[in-house]
Every structure is written in structure tokens, then in C-alpha cells.
Length: 121
Image (tube, rainbow, N blue to C red; front, side, top):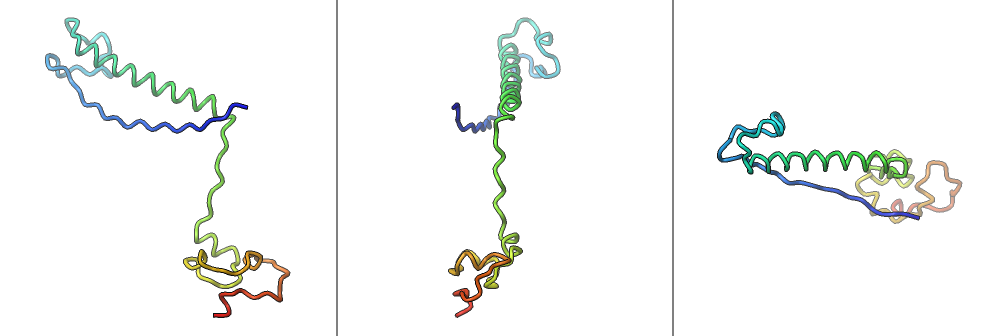
């Protein structure tokens, strides 16, 4: 079995320009817009190409991994918990501190003799 966790977070901000050619933009002009074989402009173009390659590799990974990924089940919010028929009538904000039996927290329970401990107070 092949199993691993994958979490990728890349947050780099690059702000660069050539001192000799400050209007050169590798996104718009590409390799053909480099004037006079400027090494800084070539570096900017290579940096742009590396970013495009990284984005493409990430998209390809997600495309290939999607058949095997599991979608996590959503955790119910406190508002949803109050709609589940909490028998001891504890407010949703106090539900986490309720000490009654979990069997009393279902809508249709056959337990009649047991009482919720929060009702005794």
C-alpha cells in the first residue's frame, strides 16, 4: 500500500526588474523581448518559466491523485448540534459541557427511566 500526506503551501512574493530594461515583462514579451542578450532579463524569464512549471506540476499531481483522495466528512457546527434533538434542552453553547448520557441525546430514544443530569440542577 502506498500512502502519504501531501500539503503544499508556497507563498513567495517576487518583485524584480532589470536595471537596464525596467519595462521588460516576461509574461507579455517572453524570450523574444529580451534586448541585447541581457543576463538579468534572461534570469527573469527563467524565473517566470519555473513558476509556470511549478503550477503545471501541481495541477498534474492533483489530476492524477484525485481518484484516490478521500473527502473528509464535515464536522457539524454547534447550530447543527442543537437541531439534532438534544433531549436535555441544553443550549447549543452549553452542549459541550453537558454530562448526561449520550443515549439521551438522540431524537428517538427508548430510554425513559434515565434522566439527564442537567435537568436535576
